[in-house]
Image (tube, rainbow, N blue to C red; front, side):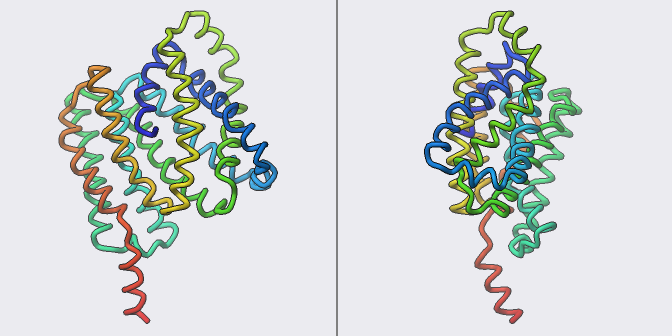
Length: 287
């Protein structure tokens, strides 16, 4: 569910503007989840935390979904998936530097952060110099990865007992409201141009599968294994995104991807591994 959005965003963007794609997927997601949230009686408790829900909506959806959709007009879905694999080591760095996560002090975690960062620099540098990518859209993907690293940490710390269903339903409703002024003119123009059946179908998949269902499952994963380790799903996302892009969109595998991919995957794996045993052992030694 988290590996296929990039493929369907690419198809939807052939007929719809970026604001239209984002607005329609969140509206569909809202229509799918909000009635369930109301039926289960979780809406009132969720609204009590509305400032943090709004923060989550902005950091997880408002910015990143625009960045990704806009960037995909210039870069491949494989590159999008690859840049999202930087999330585990960005998350580890944030939790270690700003939140005092002791596990981030593990030597292997530090090595992972360094290796992963080297992979990002290699990918952007090699492909930029060879003309395979545009730096601007790629930096949008970097900003997206940073946002995706921050959002689950905030959700896990500030809303640990709040209903997952409620948070996602209200978040999508907020995003729909925020984007409404931007689609008043763009969406009618897109529809008047005659979108393809494939683009309409992609919007439905993005709204129901990649937004509503995927988010509910991801929140459950965060509560089960924590925000840092939950980001390890980006490895599978990369595989799915790359296969779909190469097989169905005829996307190339660039030199930067060949060099940066191994470094990013290895670095993210090392930085994202669970270090709880290490922390407990170190605390015993200090005691």
